[in-house]
Length: 205
Image 1 (cartoon, rainbow, N blue to C red):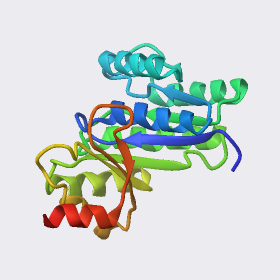
Image 2 (spheres, one colour):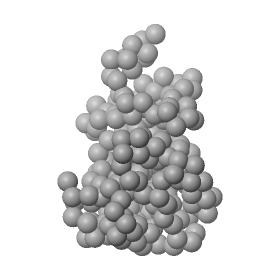
Image 3 (cartoon, rainbow, N blue to C red):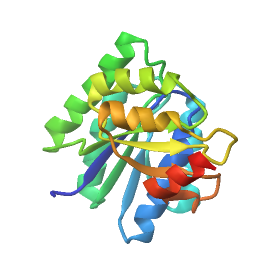
Image 4 (cartoon, rainbow, N blue to C red):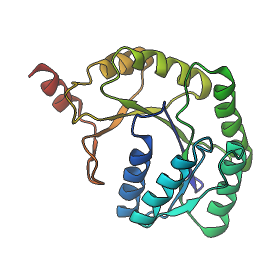
């Protein structure tokens, strides 16, 4: 693949998307990759600041514009920075929006178009972050995000909570999507590759 690899992170508010991005960046850096995190959630100033803190903490590159900027412009300029400064992975945050809002879904499509024009094949992966405690709502979230920007994989967060996360099995089956990682806590190491056998055992215990 022609670097940088562009990974678009999507999901509703409150699912732990920001910490998941930091964990993925940390993981990629441990593998020797040069990572840039781009703050495409421009609606919430706090989201930009939070991401910047995480990027600083793990030593990843960071790109943002002021709150309220066009997220597609952030994505476009982040791609410029990636290419000119030799990054090989771009983790692009997007607003944790209410998936029922059609205009916000259009924005995701626009981001996708913009990075695709800038860099062939981008975004290479769209990763949907789902909170394990969500329940049936996870199905409607997946359906809407899948329609807007064809989800490639799922990361399941907050599996350390009381919920067993069983609904994600339904999501994976209904949409034919792989679950790649599970988040088990707040620490950087708490993002583990998903193991179906272990998960099934945990569900049955």
